[in-house]
Image (cartoon, rainbow, N blue to C red; front, side):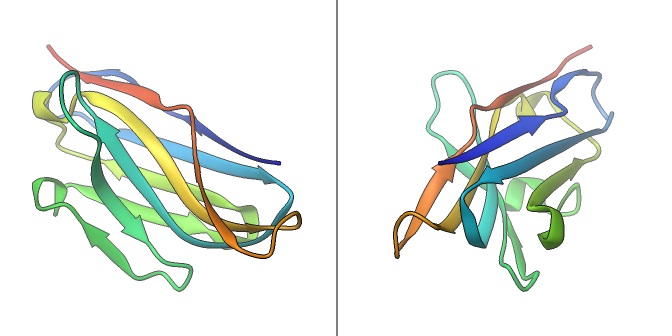
Length: 121
């Protein structure tokens, strides 16, 4: 079994900052790519940022220059530093990771439960 647990969401004013965390735990052999997605009400889930095990990153155009994704491989932890937040960033943010477990030989995609980020004055 593998669990991804997010934390760090909340209410913030426009132009403020938040830092999201995602901790992976369980029967983990190796974590490959990790990512943050978000889903606003009435919208489809979209990729925010992604990072490989080697540290290569990619970002959605809407967050480039404002958000930074990072990870600590030794701690199986993923972060998202969000600066200059805008009301359009309001959404539930989900952690995603491609993980090889001790149970199956293939890599599976796991999701966290989501954390709400609300940007409002």
